[in-house]
Image (cartoon, rainbow, N blue to C red):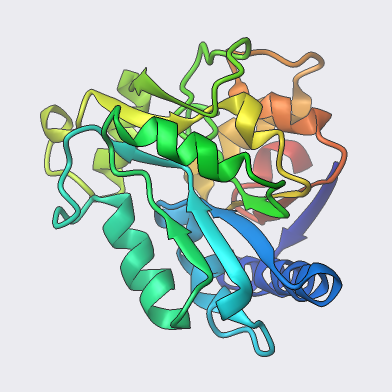
Length: 243
């Protein structure tokens, strides 16, 4: 594990984007294509904004997957992660080799599983939630499943985060379930980059870094077992580990 602390979210985004761009270009040069997993949410704004501006990436050689989507939420809804990535990433970079969206239905799981397991994911951008979740694997996360995607129930803190970020007007408006990439599948990424800015993430970062054991009560602790894991923080999110 490597921890990189930047001054603020904007600098974090630029630094992480440069690293991701280098990985993508290297993979494309080596084998003609690259596969990436993208996460969403407010914490990823600056990283994705910077990534789409990185020069020299042959986006037509890049295959994109994403982590999760609410069950029964249409793509037209402001909180839809498909809408988020379509507008902030896909529309910005132009033609991609392929785009694999989670549509929030049980029926999508088989096709996504088939596609994601055709070859390794070169790099995954995996956020960490306020409750320590990765994707929508809220505590206690299922560390035992070997499925690629599963339907999960969202816990109260997760729903409060979605409301707090402005995606939903009240907690009752937040969907109760989502289709999520599993912790097992996340760990199959060749490289993992976690961009975790803002003060609201300081507790989750501290719990993740200071935990002496991997625990499904803080799902992000699993990332520390990955052989190529870089955690990008800003000064606010790193406050708990710097004190």
